[in-house]
Length: 186
Image 1 (cartoon, rainbow, N blue to C red):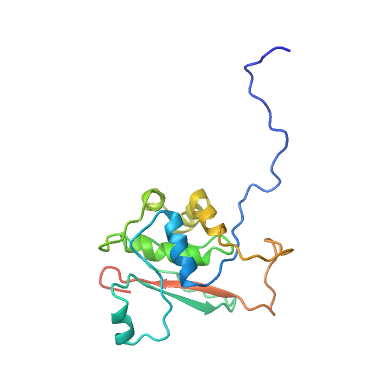
Image 2: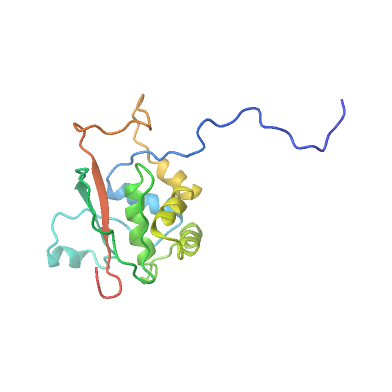
């Protein structure tokens, strides 16, 4: 046998180079553990049953609110948001990533909050995507391997369910939306 310095060819090609994201549980404990897997610290998630001042006061500091809405699929032709300098907004381009995307929207827009540390992976994402358009920020999230791997670590055990399955009109589909104080506005 002779040794060769020529590069070797992979034995097989990947059929699907796009990495999938699983559905994760809507649970504050899962969200808290997820951000720890991202490398962030100094925050935790709590479930709210009202938006009364007294309840919010017990949870101070509040970095943002993440709401879970039933998705209707209706087309909305309004622009998604105005360009606000320094605001991190990413168009969701990945199925099943809305929980993580909502969490990132909260953390990346409150990175200056006292006690909150983003960690290297989120700092890198925020810096890399800062000057990208909204849709390209969504692609940056899709391609952030550490974030995707952390997200997928919370896959619900559902045997025989395909990641490629599309929701039907009979399915209940939900979507997370984040609200954060930023620049004197929400």
